[in-house]
Structure formats: structure tokens, C-alpha cells
Image 1 (cartoon, helix red, strand yellow):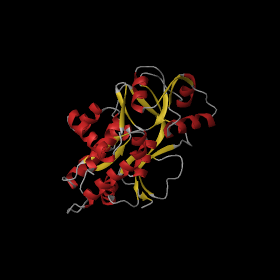
Image 2 (image 1 turned 120 degrees about the vertical axis):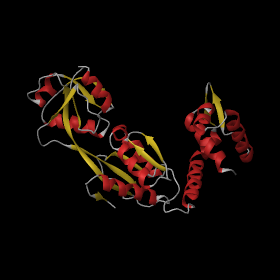
Image 3 (image 1 turned 90 degrees about the horizontal axis):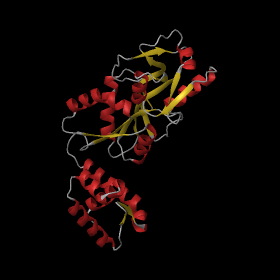
Image 4 (image 1 turned 90 degrees about the vertical axis):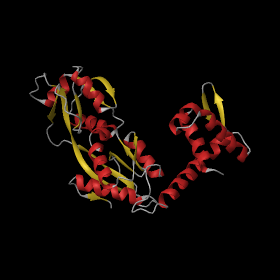
Length: 294
């Protein structure tokens, strides 16, 4: 069995479309369809079926999907470990949250390119919870994310990069004498309470007895910043390393003010561990905070 055909099957299921999967794999749709038919002929059962304009796995396709992912991952790890270089062959599969993509990742990628020019990086964006799940499953070698509000599994190693205390974000033209009073009186844009930063902000205000006048609630610090700059209200957010925006101002909040922890997570044991360790070395060189759980 050609593992590339299995990889293509997984890609089609994930994309929900042969055309989209073909675009992602840089294959002609007819070629991808022929390879799927070859895999179905090899296994003796249909694996995908059309539902309107999309495709979905058949019963048999759903049954083999997890095993197919495992075989594809194992094949990729085998090829990676067969490298005769100091590191397994790439790419380094790195997850990053939207704020990490904008702030932490660019200098880290420059450092990686200088240190390991022959090993490329494949970056996967996502939420912290989704990226953590993909690290635990072995789909990603490492991820830059926000530490959850619970202990990480013992199979994970963690390196802190920065602490981001909560701040009040307000339009620069707004006169703010007391950040907490502004949070209570002004229209308020709530950071999604399903994510760590939003939960920290909601709990902080609740402890202080502040009930903000919530106008919107959304996930996405940069998007909230745009709304604040347009005068839709104020927000309490982690002090993220975003690009400076002259139309907004960040105001410190009184102690005890919680912080979210941003860092790098990876598996302690993996055939591609050397890649994560090489990235970890660069993270330590770029940032002063000591590593935890290594």
C-alpha cells in the first residue's frame, strides 16, 4: 500500500473537497481522484462519498480514518528520522496562536533560518486548546500558545516565554483617570470567556464587583483592538505583543492583576524530539525566562 494514497485520503476528508485537497497537495484533481480509486481498489471498499458539493467518508472510511492518520504520521516520522543530518529532516511542524503569529514567531523564525537553514518550518495557526491537542496527538512537534488554566499532562514539557498581565485598552482620545471606573462605565468589549485571557479578565472584574456594560463578546485580541480604536468601547485584555496602534492606549490595572502565561509546549518523547529541542534552545536564547518541565 502506498502511504501517499493514505495521506491523500486523509487530506480529502479534512478538506471536505477533492478540489480543495488537490490544491493543498499541489496535485491535479484527476490525479488525486485516481489515487483515491487505487486505494479503494486495494482495500476493496469505497472510502468517500459525495454529499452535495462536498465529500465525506463512508462508514468504512470513517472506521479507518484514525488508523490512516497514524500510519501517515508514522511514515512521515520514519522518513524524518532517516536523515543523515544533525536534526531529523523537516519540516518542523509548529503551531502558533494568532497573537504568537504576529508577535513572537517572526524573530524566532529568523533565528531558526540562521541556525538551521536546511530545515524548513511548517506553521499551523489555531487556538491554544486546539494546538495543545495536536501536540498531544503528535500532529505537531511543538506549539506557541497560552498555558491552560490547568496542569499540563506529564507527557508535555513547557517553557515560559512571557507573562502578559491584564490591561485596559481604550481609545487614545478617551480621558481615563481610573481604568477600573472606565471598565465599569464605558461600553465594554468582552474578550471571549471560553479562552484563558477572557476568563482571567471576567474573573478579575467579578472579584472587584465590576459589572461591565458588555456590547460585544468575541475571540481575537487584534479584532477587539480594532473595535476599540473605532470608538466602540473599552476592553480588558492581556498585554499582548501586537503592533503599536497610535489610536489606542494600554492602561495598567491595579494589583492583584492576573497574567496569562505564553510559552512553548512539546512532547517529552517523540521520534522528532530533536527538532523541538532545537527550537527550545532558540526560545531560551531569545527570551530570558527559565524553562519549566524539561
